[in-house]
Image: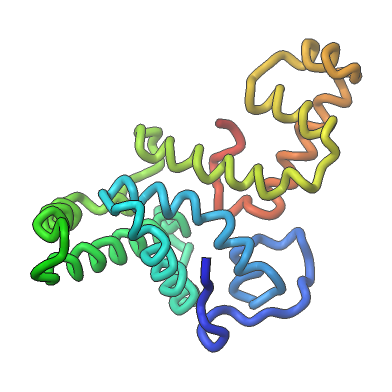
Amino acid sequence: MTREPADRRPKRRASLSTSRSLLVRVRNDEDDAWTRLVDLYTPLVCYWCRQNGLAEQDLPDVAQEIFQAVARNIERFRDDGPNSTFRGWLRTVTRSKVADSFRRKSKEPEAAGGSDAQFRFNQLVDKDDPASQNDDGSAGLSEERRVLFRQALELIQRDFEERTWNAFWKVAVEGRPTADVAEELNMKPGTVRVSRCRVLARLREEFGDLIDGNEQT
């Protein structure tokens, strides 16, 4: 995905500490933090776009617009309220850009699917704003968590040896008993538990403030 022009996207400099949250690192313009944020959230943004009826051919352009808006406004986001989460803010930005896309298409007199675009736009603006919903386990939000959690795992998988990762995956994701996994992988049960804890600790270290409540699928 093409990122924001250099004069608008966060500047880069050497990372100071991998233990600091990703959102803080982005705001501090640290090296590769912006790329990491885009990598983490692109699948979820695309999921939201599809849920709101955006056509597949429009996804790349709209997703780029979304992350450009985030880059321009990241300093305005505040997470000091009980329902103020980055995910909720990003969802609002996404809905706004999808609505803009439908609005543009509805004004194209000869555009194929123009009437459908108008219908989708009307549906979108009539919906209750999901950013005001609480993380209460509803089906839509649960799916959001799964999309985000799995992408975060994919991004950190390379940081672990295959055996460690397999132990974590079988216990934490597949839900298998520690003793069974230990026997299958020829590991001690304690080592399996340590593997699980190491991966989850790494997950929280980098993405903890962004995937809150996602330690389990």
